[in-house]
Amino acid sequence: MVNRVTFRKSVQGFKNNWILIFTGLIYMAINIFAIIAVKTLLRGVLSILAGFIMLVVSSCLISNYLYLLFNIINYNKITMDDFKDGFGYFLRKIYGIFFIAWIGSYFLSAVLRMAGGNAILINRVVSIVVLVALNPLPETIYQKHYSSGESIRYALEFMEENWLNWLLPNVIFYLILYAITNTLIVGIFTTYLSIGYDFTIKRIGGYILGQALFSFSMIYRGHLFKLLSTSTRRKRRYMDKLYD
Image (cartoon, rainbow, N blue to C red; front, top):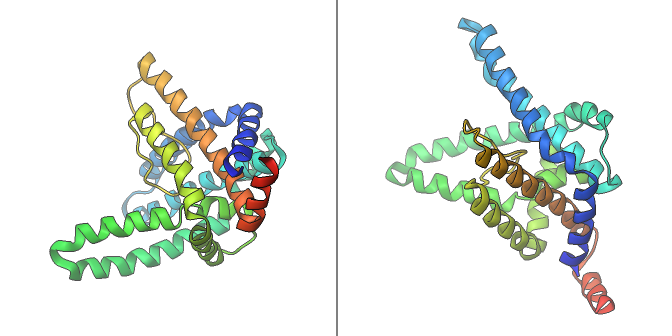
């Protein structure tokens, strides 16, 4: 019942908001412009600000994408005003999470320096654990009214309770996406697929197809998270029997 209801809502949401596919092109353009501007304007001593500015830009783009998903999941529509408002809507929360991640990476670096030859293995294991354990963090950000730290804690608790229902469809989507685009999603806050520098018709067609699947999967994740986070296993078992 869970996946049946989620799939039906996701199809309707994607049908009404297919324009989400092309936000990736806008985000790429903004990223490229920001990189060029930073490299051109911030030279010498000012170059120390480059990382901070690019982090803010990335946070704004993630905020925008999550706000669009918020409106699709809750209202089944997005508007130009939603796009304009989205850049700052979740900015503080996302930037706070990045700050916590920076602190975590600082301590991890200290551990890796002491790990010697096992550093690479430990780093990969930690990356995989974080990707899995905090996988629903984007949905937590735009569906729950928690602070940055509370969002991380809730995502962990959500995975503890719903790991099978959450991971199974996500793994399927990731595998199909990899088969189509040869792109492996390794970031929690991925907001679009990169088209690269190959602009052949085949590559562009594959990119649009991949971006469409990625957009559908993000809408699916949003509806799945909403259903799982607002119901109990007992209630879902009851609904299964009712629908059957």
